[in-house]
Length: 209
Image (cartoon, rainbow, N blue to C red; front, side, top):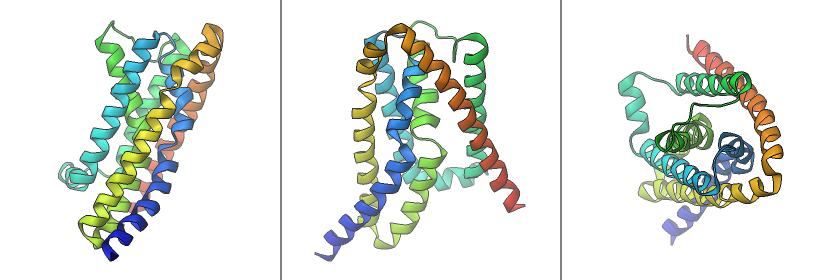
């Protein structure tokens, strides 16, 4: 009975910070911006690849993330800088050239679902850091605590998929003109978020020196 109570407590305490870190509603405009030249089926496929990427990355990080970072000598702050630089380059490319990436017919559109949608937009440094902190926090409860964190992560991904799955409906309402305007605004916001990520990462690195 105590184990069940620990599980639900860990589930609740893990679900809320992960939901804030994932922020699927905030990610939706960027999904629209990155896929505004795609058809409905291609957009749905890109979202599916993004969610599968987010799932694989999150679960892998829970399992071996700390060990991999340690083996590579990479810190979360350095990952934050790398993710920020990627987003900044993409946003600048869109503002200057009108495209986030040069999309090849099939492979390129699928790649958008992996990077930058799957990571670092859906599961990026904020989510990975939250997962790291939560697994450390609830590891004292043994397997029950880790399972609670994983279930909370999976529930958040399901919610995110349901929200991002509405991208086609939103795109249908906005039409081409609205999608183009949204994509330009989103690219500016994405650049600002990228700069913030880089600054936070550099501050974290400097604090450890």
